[in-house]
Length: 423
Ligand SMILES: [Zn+2]
Image 1 (tube, helix red, strand yellow):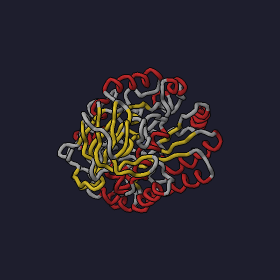
Image 2: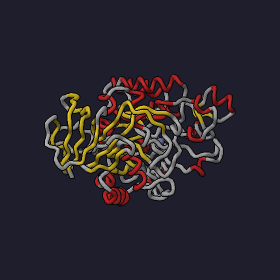
Image 3: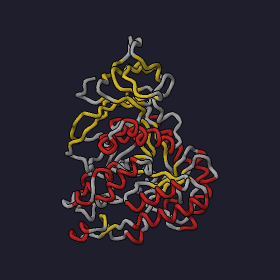
């Protein structure tokens, strides 16, 4: 298939070029202004940025086990609509992804669904129970690079150290932590602060996150492991990571789009679509996350796309499950926070691809580079009202957003084109 992306601003390794881009097969064939585009399917990219397809290092696809919320097929469609050409699926499935056969099975089924790359993260502990180390080497050999018990924290210090030592021996392997001291969050449903006290709802203190991160950074220093801090939410955690990086530790961190947009004051209505872990915190936390993202302390934006059905969510705020979807609104939310084309593709594509060890993702387009691409209109205003995801538990529902994915190309295939666009 030949595709011509016409008239956009292409982010090439040499800089931004106002040019056409021709895709042939699964590669970028050429970028220029006098290309022979005969026979190509045309995509109108006037006013749009053309860059590498987005990469999410934190997606919950709910397969196997909870496919009424999402599955590989619906998750892939949501990813395509959000501009993503690759993602890392979290292992808190049923059963949890804690061995090589399950990792290989996810990869095989993802390949049968199309060109969007899905890598399974592997659980750190057997059954994600936090007591016995999983066979990380077996999962590594099956292709896993990112290991996490996400949804739960590996709190046992000896176990965490043992796993870090094992992963430090595997090139490119990453110990990713959902940092939460469970004893401090047992009865919590929202950020502990003035809003939780006023509403009389149990709080989730910032320290529950930063205490674990502080401990883990000490272990990372000791073991030399590549440590990735998932969904950073608190100002204190941003400071800890900034210090660790200035010391030269191999530490990376992610922030979710919703933590860049919202804060605890958005919870006054007790809309369960604002309930997630870690919770939305104070505005000073949100601003610290934004500046951490801009100064490079936080490496990437990751969606923590966590689908739950409307019925599951509609049981009152405190009983509602934690988590919100994010694949289809991440690009706009990130654009609103960074407002810079280079930074946008850095935090949503090149850096996440590097963390996840994805060789054909995250490359600025040039002749011969893999045709994993997104066409993004930074000025387009739109309102999030329906989703390709099976679930619609989004805090952005009904909100006017700026910046929209116009088309997504994965391995040279047009996997999404926005309806009603000019193309
Ligand atoms: Zn998590």
